[in-house]
Length: 405
Image (cartoon, rainbow, N blue to C red; front, side, top):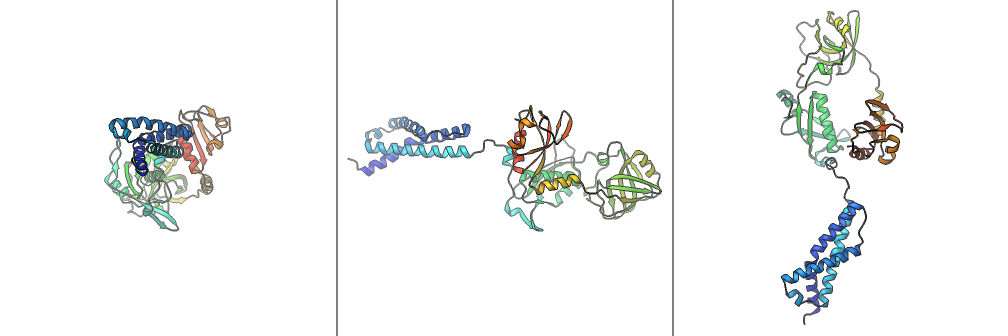
């Protein structure tokens, strides 16, 4: 007669063979039920199901190996049943925990919310920064004309520094915005990996001066002594004899060679010029040329002037920037969103949606039926295609953006 330890080992062997399929079924059943419904299946019911499946599995094993039934006895069967029960109980517990912890909504955006590797972060000026380098050259965007080689080289060789605490998706967005502002590209696509290496594709500017000149105004270039630090968008006054013309700087250049006839301004009403490969953010001062967007009668006065002078006018403090600064210091961010047709808040009012309590964000303004409403009340309707400016912590904004999009 076989000894008890040998019978116990034989029972463990049989339990492992017969319990593989019940264990997998118990894991899948526990995981799916908890993930879909949020409730746990009673462990006793799962164990009973596992033992029943083990019996079926044991029958198939008996067909494959007749010695299994010949060697079966009470000790072997009891140990085998205990092994099967423990396997099913354990796998059910693992599946139940995984179903509870796995996020209900998975998206490509949430997978991209990764940060930079610590090896790529530098401590500069009391804060962590990262230098993003462009690898593989700057590619062309499909459907757009190719980039000029000088512009391609300038983008590749430029130094790109950003805060190191940004997620990769935000880092890519800021990189693309910098490309549009610094090099005036029409469109940009940026992908950044965890080591701060960027793959960049860009489209050349579709227009130069004409794109930056407001509708109804004319761009006039004048030669003058250019103050140091003038940048695009500054408000200046052009003094032409007794005439004083106010306008907005469209472009400026100083420190270069003087023009052949520095006293003669040139009208640039709708010309599209190719921008410089390495545009300077501000002027360095000295003799140069400034292109100013002015009213049409003022443009004729500047064209008739022999000599002009440039005076920079104070713009003052921008209240909107102060507001954004206060929100950021309070841990709040502002984001612009467009509601889709399947958004839960669509076809309701702002009060019925209860956005503040449900999603933890505040609607600052909204556009409905083509008109904007600042600080909307609870009776403002929400429809598909409406645009909202919402404020709140970054985590809540990301969650609300997932719902809206």
